[in-house]
Image (cartoon, rainbow, N blue to C red; front, side, top):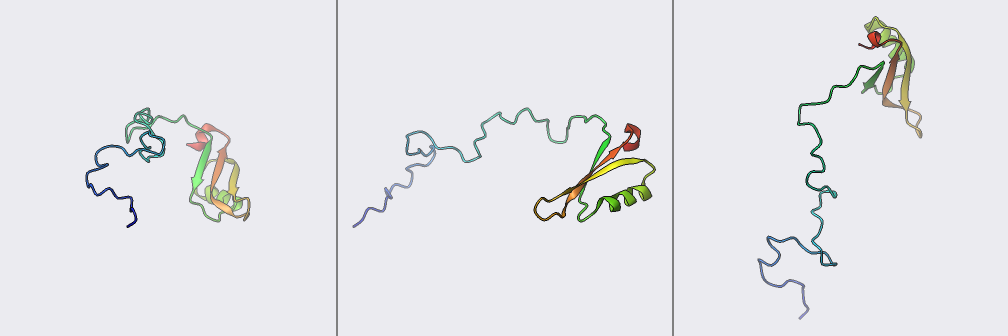
Length: 110
């Protein structure tokens, strides 16, 4: 009869960390994060205040071109847009769905 590798004892291994082939306890499997590594994050719902900027990120604008975004912003806002940078995929040359709008003044971006 061949040895199946099962020792027959149900409680062997329960309650203690499994050991690797090198005799050390195995990693817990959480990507190598240790306790306290992310404790410097703010509590949920509390975020740091971001300073005002002349750049506005637009996300979820699938297949939109620079001219279409410029026309949309001209019809819905009163501010002057200095430039628009639509982000394209390198391989397909299609818009990736987001763009950055640059304003001349800080007041225009608000």
